[in-house]
Length: 337
Image 1 (cartoon, rainbow, N blue to C red):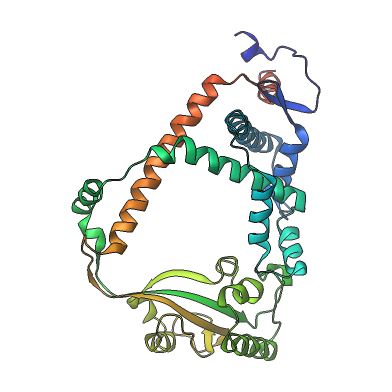
Image 2: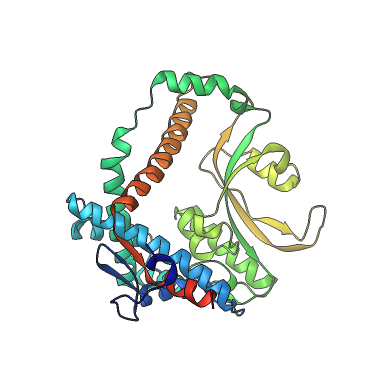
């Protein structure tokens, strides 16, 4: 295989960076993903850094093409109906304008999204058929895992599963607010008005997650509907107002509007927040007969076995495929000069 390391000339167009069983992967596909990865960064990577990223992107596209071809041979490609159904599911929480803003923020066209849905659904069908159907988690597996990791199921203090909607009075660029509407309060008066409007809408029955995605000004939680995950009781005690408000809630209820301070112990309010209690976990040992414990263990074992089999499966498919990476040869040839 002398050509593999010397970069011999092959019969391909300059726009073809690789081929999988004769199917070309084009430069434009790689560049689109590359530019999306750069986002709004003003710092351009060096040529070496850029080529490393492009090689990684190309490897990902090669693997995806191998899987798509395998699925096609097994008649497991996603149908138009399956793609449209998933698209409608994604669009459901949003108005058309909100949905378009979401696409724009991710530098996607509708066709790009449909292509990604088709690839994802096809992979899902292929993995379900070839991998997940082979995994069987027994009661003995679950008991064995529990006995080896019993301490993991002992909560030393209560935990609270929370979601939040945050509005700050700190002026920043609207596109940095982290929500779908690019909604940003620019001063304290605007923040008070906005958070009161959101609290009113919540009390009238609107969905907390949808409002958080569209209006919350916490970029790390807004995309997930405000979900903060589980917070321990000691963490909540760091803010007495938040703890006292949350402690009174039943799952599904929301707090009143609470101040957000610049730092722990500070009395300088920089905004306002509304919290929702999703669930509460009491302290103590979770026993094996707890359905939540069994489900968590079953899912963890299934996920780890699935990932192992996926890695092995893809390596087998790579061995069976005829792949030529022209871009890798080009990079190697240039670097050796």
